[in-house]
Structures are given as structure tokens and as C-alpha cells.
Length: 347
Ligand SMILES: NC(=O)c1ccc[n+]([C@@H]2O[C@H](COP(=O)([O-])OP(=O)(O)OC[C@H]3O[C@@H](n4cnc5c(N)ncnc54)[C@H](O)[C@@H]3O)[C@@H](O)[C@H]2O)c1
Image 1 (cartoon, rainbow, N blue to C red):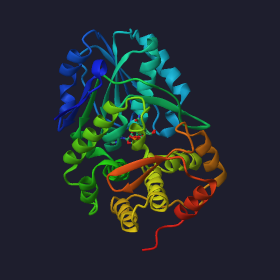
Image 2: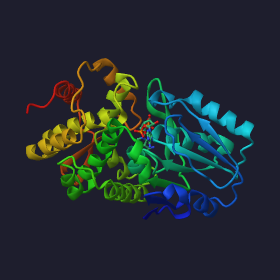
Image 3: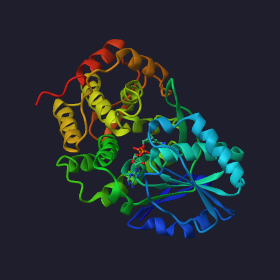
């Protein structure tokens, strides 16, 4: 299946299906016709080999959120230079959000903008991180604080690569899937309630369609439409950052953030309590955490202030499938949410 991201001159396609990574060489030749060599950026543990159909060298970056840093970007760019990568060549990112955010930012910076393509290997990458052109790294002060919009020329979501994904990573990806259901697709949301993900192909395809549509509508997050993708992310990012990268996976922190956003939606915009409980039950059915003990409130407060999306912009859902943005969230509201997510829901 091919899902286009309609961005005019920057239009590109997302290939979704079993074995589609084997189409990389042919598609690259068509999408980046001037490229004579490829810099493949990946991690040691991923183990997905690709053939870009041209001379290539593999550059590995360390595993984990901590690798999403400026020193790693510098290291990559210097290695690209030694390899002789020119502005008309191509960077091929093979991995999850850490790899595609890093390689995309390195490509955005190298020669002031070199083409790149993403071969997304975990669920979270396929449904979210690899699509949309947000690239960047973390600073000690907060998540994704340095980055650039730089659209890939092609995204490959080969469902076969999900076979080797650890279950915990699969669940983390399902957090973003649940998010798409909440913000845009009540039928998708309801289908996730049992925790059965045997038709992962259909799930990936639907999420890619939603992301592609939202990005095409609001590429640079200026109208508020793209911001709706951040449901659960305002507090989720702060928890992820304050916990120290490596403790909670991105998707796990987002799960906790979505529980908080659901309760806040009940309080502020009338989301029914039944829907709040459905959200909690669905996240739990997907094996995701709903609380984190020992939250460092001072650090979370600091991280909220530095979140580039603005501490005061929250995505809320008046009902499943619809969102609103609000700035009407007080320090007291945040305190109450932190109380809430310190303990599991009463069953
Ligand atoms: N740019 C965006 O729009 C966007 C959107 C969402 C998330 N993100 C970012 O993405 C990051 C999280 O991404 P992630 O969850 O993909 O994490 P990740 O990149 O750390 O990948 C998860 C883990 O799975 C391993 N892995 C990946 N594919 C595998 C496979 N097929 N088989 C076995 N192991 C495999 C990786 O080596 C890694 O250890 C965060 O930094 C987040 O901020 C970016």
C-alpha cells in the first residue's frame, strides 16, 4: 500500500506492507535520482539490512533516548564528510524514532540540507516518528529542543521488521496508535479495547493515513491541527524527561500522559467519565503503564516550562475522535494530575 503525504513540491510516499524494504533501491532511484552514494544510519541492535542500490556505508549510533543529542549529530556529520557524502547524495535512516530523528536532523544540517529516507523498523516509527519531517535532538533542559523541519523523500514501513520487536517496544508503539484513535478515529479506538493486535498491518495503514493527512494539512504546526497529535504529550514529555531517559520508554510516558489528558478533558471540556475509563482500560489492555510512582515534581515543572510547545498548550478531547487546544490549565490542575498519575486507577 502506498500512502502519500501531500506536501506539494515536498510530496512523498509511505510504503506500507510485508517486505516493502526490498523496494528501496528502485524507489530511491526514482525519488532521489541524483544520489550516487548512501549513508545508512542505524543501531547495532536493529539487525535490518537494506540495499539502497548504490555504494553505501553504514554508520551506527548508540541505542536509547540519550543518543538523541548534539554530539551524536556532530559525529554523524563528520563521518558523512569523511565518507565524501555530497549534497546530492542520500542519508538512509534504518530504525526507530531515535535513529530517524537523529539522522533526519543530521541530514537537515549536512550541506545545509541533504536528502534522506526513513526505513522505520519499530511500530512507533512506522505509525508516527518516521513521517512528518520533524527532526531533532534533546538538550539536557528538555526533549526535542533543537531540531528542524526536514521532510524525508520516502518512508518505508515494512511490516516484516516488526517480527523481531520486543513486546515492550510493541506496546510503546501501541500508545501512539491509541492516541490516533482518541484524536481522530473512534472505530480504531474501540478496536483496541481487547488488546488483540493480530491485524497489525491494518492498524499501521490507518495510523499512517491519519498522520499523513494531518501533516499535509499543517506541516509546520501553525494552525493547531498538527498540535492535536500531541494529545498526552505535554505531560508525557515532561515525565519522560524528568524520569531520566532510559527509565520509561517514550510510548510508556505518553500512555501516562494520555491518562492525565483524559482526566483533564473530563474536568475542562466534558469528556464523559465512561470515556475516561475506556481510555484507561484500553491503555491497560495494550500492556501500557497508567502511573509512575516517585515522580520528581520539581523536574516535571521545569520540563513543562521548557516544552517547546508551551506549557500552557494542552490537547484535550471533548469526546473520542475530537480534540480542542486549551491554554486554560493552572499550576493547581497540574498538581492534581501529578497526584492522579502517582497511583494506579482504582479497579
Ligand atoms: N519526529 C517525530 O515526529 C516523532 C514522533 C514520535 C516520536 N518521536 C521520537 O521517537 C523516539 C522514540 O522512538 P522509538 O519508540 O521508535 O524508540 P527507539 O528509536 O529507541 O527504538 C526502540 C528500540 O527498538 C529497537 N528496534 C527498533 N526496531 C527494531 C526491530 N525491528 N527489531 C528489534 N529491535 C528494534 C531499537 O534499537 C531501540 O532499542 C523518541 O525520541 C520520540 O521523541 C519522534
